[in-house]
Length: 603
Image (cartoon, rainbow, N blue to C red; front, side, top):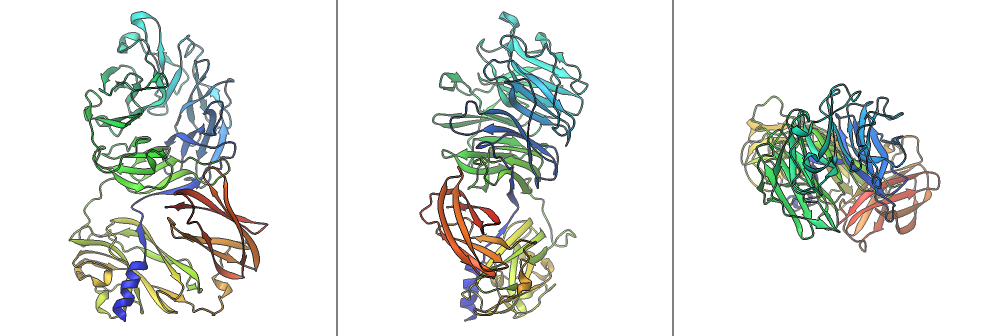
């Protein structure tokens, strides 16, 4: 009987470590369907993004709108750059929470300007001079600052004949004055008809690279004063009469970079290890998503993503300069990325006007994990907490463990969560206690956070008192769940047990388990994620009421609308989603006075 029970437990428990994951944040975009096409991370709290209007039939997708967070993404605010009529954002480049630059262009008339704010976007003033981007072929594409004083701006070629060059400017005083880069410092054009593309550049410190429509990459190693040019070797790519050989470009350091061409038949990748002087073809191992690429400064890490039906809604990362790729997720829209190190970054997501989401904050580490040996003082089993110490019948317990750092040595190593009939805190050989009832398998992650869900419906554990205990270990042997392993006491670290009571069917749910933050009801969780057939929502209410449940797709179209009676206490509301196509949806629970919206993925 005991063996059968443990087999069921091992199958039902679902523990997911978050070594690399995205945390969804609400952009509060209400004016149009759209996304951040350019996002720049300053630090863990500050990021700015430029917005794209993705509404079908919009006169132009470009806007003068930006988004900004200064509290790590808890709150995003949207504003508009007050500029000359007709100007829209080409790219955005922040210095800190208050100071930010935007390159702006007129998509119909050309030209453009650089604008700057020093008060968090409350006011914007021109930084560029009247002479900048004022010629007949001028078009402002890029602004970048290596630091608060030293900046660079790039625009399409100007001039005539042999003197026709890209219009490049530099500043050494925070944009108060700009100097045009001399023709002699800029390589000649490959073709008189070539030009640059808005936001098609990459920069690491003093090094700047920008791509051209004819497949070339220009490079400066001195903040934009002197330039070289190289041919990537990508073939000509013409779409609707317009040539653009390079779709994306990204560097992670002064030597290593990638360019991507997305064409009618697929995509091509080229990489460089000498700062862009030469380029070689790359055949990726794993799934590469060509919609967006970004390098993590000072590392071998690149991140890619996409947000369309052709290449999927997904993101992945590489730790070997873009050769081998590992999925971060494969069920969400990703339109832009920006990282300042391997654990700090933000991203964009396409959303319909008024929908939740629109921004991502990265959680975890992307760099290759260092070896963690037995006895390392930083090893930690983490601290486990539960959503409620008393789990009512037909409700779900959620156990979250934070601060995990596991050994990385031996054939079997990682993290597990143990279920036992007694307290096993600190025991280096818990399987010998006779108290272990079940647990998860080995999660081979070195660090991060894990979350485990257990429905209290009587099918897994009967009503009673149980203990949940986090454990990390190395040098273990065996296969399967934690209770099947032979643990090395010298490399096993067992955390503190947490007691949980599962109530039987028919037992009244104590009001003390409610924590609704002064609201009359709350949706405390949804499962499973992703969902295949039935979406279950945990709803807690302070009184009996009728709730309306509405499911919408990413465009805001209502898919279904139902009403449910919710009783005082904990409830499980189930919605049939079997007929939905795979994708991202929202579900809203409305009691007439309050509403809660959650996002879910249909597989």
